[in-house]
Image (cartoon, rainbow, N blue to C red; front, top):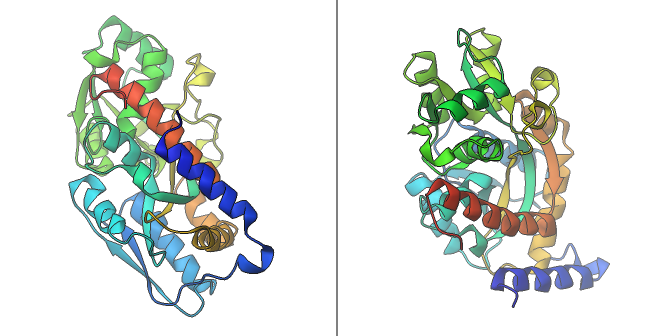
Length: 330
């Protein structure tokens, strides 16, 4: 029997396909748009949300309205999600759609279910990296795997912002595929990846798992060395020389996505409007430059692909959480 989320997807796909061309632009913002950001200012989620807000305004896509970006911090992002959920059917409200929210909900860190919302677009494909200090004896991912196979507790590994979040999953998945006992790892959670990298630089931990924008500046300063990328394929620019886990013989990757979601209960015309607007943002040179400068990849995937990803990632994260002893499959 199909899940209610799969059924909802099928209904929306049908509605999107049946809308006549003349009706597709019928809905447009008629008041200010509020973009809720469920994290504090300064991180990549905030960076990308504000970049999208700036592009929507600058490109004149809001039909004379403006976009207010508002950081609503607390409960791992659940406060922002609950406020967005309360705006049911109101497409003048946006929220951040991120893989980390899926992992956090599966493990119980975030008391909200991303499947209740409408993911309208994925805009950024993020790269998670594993790094050590430049003076570490570990040279690559293979040596990390060998060390942890010999003794899973030997190295102290930093992740953020909590156990079971995406930076934890991004390391656990390839290590599990390589035969490491991931439930026995010594994992140290920090409030932010900035703090986890600082702990590594200070010698308080031995390894860090974090996204590229946090690690790359320290690599370029000669303070850190990257062991592996969890991306499906090798990156470009500063990441061109970084081998993926697959290139090092580990058959796994863990890609995270950042994008935009709407409240529950929005209709097909509203989804169509935001898809079209965000597609234009994805093609904007300033937006592309912002994402590429951060070390990540600008993309565009609309509602159907985003919703399918959400459901597939929920299942995959649930299964991985069980292996980590952090949750039960749902």
